Amino acid sequence: MGEPAYNVLFLCTHNSARSILAEALTDHWGGGRFNGYSAGSFPRGAVHPLAIELLEKLRLPTQGLRSKSWEEFARTGAPVMDFVITVCDQAAGEVCPIWPGYPITAHWGVPDPASVVGSDAQKRQAVSAALRVLEARIKRLVALPVETLRPETIKQHLQEIGADAMSADQEHS
Image 1: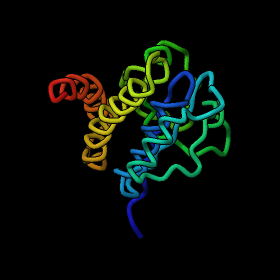
Image 2: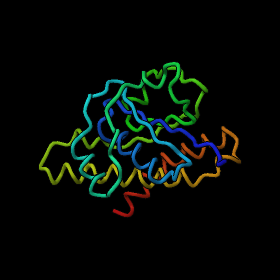
Image 3: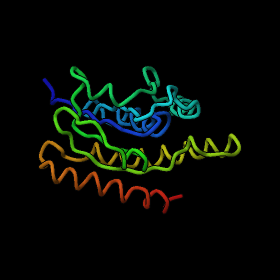
């Protein structure tokens, strides 16, 4: 029998774009070792259509992706999270529920593509930019030897990933 998978919950205010992208990317790059989940403090109730469009264009699964409240994951019987990562500034400042199992938390701020006002091309560019930042960070997360690291070391790595990947992505733009 294989090693147990690590559950990663990505939180954002509306759970319509960034956290949804992170969920799909984690499932893809996690290779069964990491499971992605997403939720919002004030979910919009619908996934941003351009996020779905981009994931489909990249041939990443979109089935089951939906905008949902973080309360689903704080309930008894919900999957126990190993990591909870906020991806927007608003959620980082909010009081989060107490998560069963006391997961390791971090903040990976990403500009909100759903808030972009402009042409469809500009909106698609914003969704693509968010995906690139999240993908770089998630690739670093899934490469960590979490099985051999202490929780405080993992937390430090997660914080560094959130601080470093944005500047690295901007250098390559």
